[in-house]
Image (cartoon, rainbow, N blue to C red):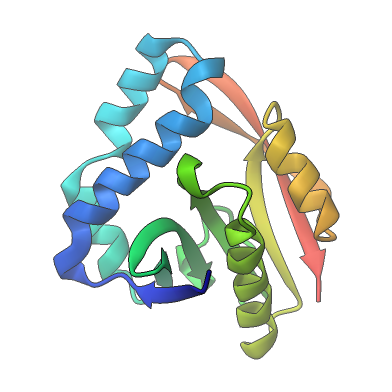
Length: 171
């Protein structure tokens, strides 16, 4: 099984939007109120904001492909595209998602390694991300890759106030 990355083109916005929705619901629906999930989806998952993300020159979004089938994606943010001000010395890994049917095949590791290498290649001092404090699977994965908690920020899922941990890895 070979994993490859493909830069997501603006013409693939609808495919990315569908993938964003599916992976988000797969990851969080079982642990959250359906009304909060739906309210968040109506605001966050629009074609307009997907196009805006793809059009941002300080963000990079890639599909992970397995035998030419989309298996997941990552979104990297540089400079002012970062969701929390971290400056030019940092790279944000805003999203890393793998479809359920591809989990357990080291695709998440491949995506993470790509993100870390991208940060190194672009001379960043650290890479950082935000993760829901109750996402134990993701927290364990990030810890295994050398990330440590350095803060937190609120995240609103619908009308439910949640907490994301901010984690970083020094390079």
